[in-house]
Length: 95
Image (cartoon, rainbow, N blue to C red; front, side, top):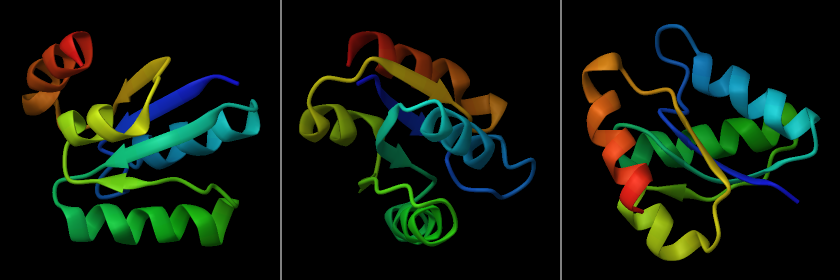
């Protein structure tokens, strides 16, 4: 099974992270971890994914923590605000 991490999973403005989580889940991928701007928000988002879509995932404070704990990750959807894309891309590439 393909394992996907989502950075910026919370639906705050456009909701792209939530949309992609649902899309990957419907295609049979495992959403193996999510991050948002803070741990409390990530926890709320993980609960929302479970309640609304049946997506069981783990929440993390940041991408390095996700990589340290989640095991093999096949892909990363970077859905954070564009100002943070470069940082998250570097973290994903070196994760």
